[in-house]
Length: 126
Image 1 (cartoon, one colour):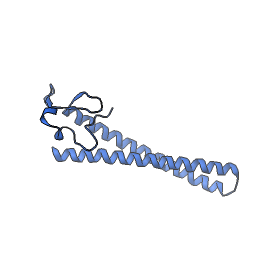
Image 2: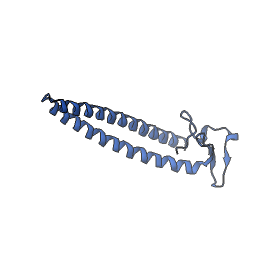
Image 3: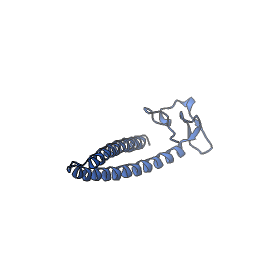
Image 4: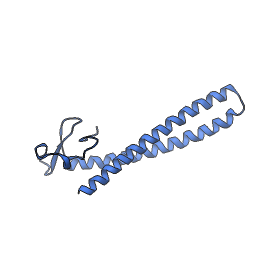
């Protein structure tokens, strides 16, 4: 589960004093709007590091899948030049797969950029 304080807000920095409390971990606790539980800021920072690694892995996987889909599409295009209906069907399937792979890659890039931006924003506050 992703613990966030909202899309346009930072975590504890932008919370009012009444929304923050000192917890047993020796750091501020943040109220997660997603699961409505109090999460120690020090643990939340660790979770953000894990989220960054996961985003990078998803981006690498999406990139590899996109490259493979593009290669399959190129092979299907060459085969479809013969005019065979089966090859044309394979081309249509490859085009669909390539489009889905491109969309997945775009989503992975967006997530990785968001996580990286949050990390940079977090460093500015520390």
